[in-house]
Length: 63
Image 1 (cartoon, rainbow, N blue to C red):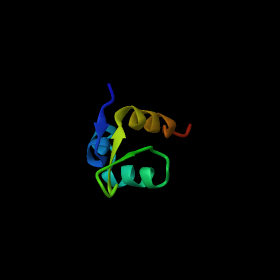
Image 2 (image 1 turned 135 degrees about the vertical axis):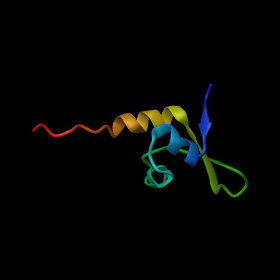
Image 3 (image 1 turned 90 degrees about the horizontal axis):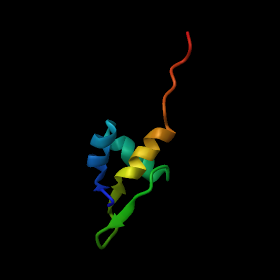
Image 4 (image 1 turned 180 degrees about the vertical axis):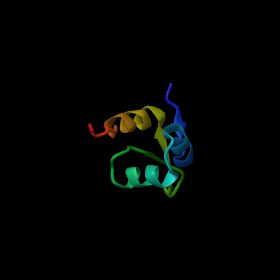
């Protein structure tokens, strides 16, 4: 079953800001599906949020 999230819910899920999620969607890094008649609103698959986070993993520098 697909779990659909709003930008705010996706941000909470990934522990990042909603602006970070919106930027990732606008830059095409995070896929989103338009909903509504004018397509202004969108939903993001939670699995895509997880994959996006894993692809942007952080590796601390060695001291």
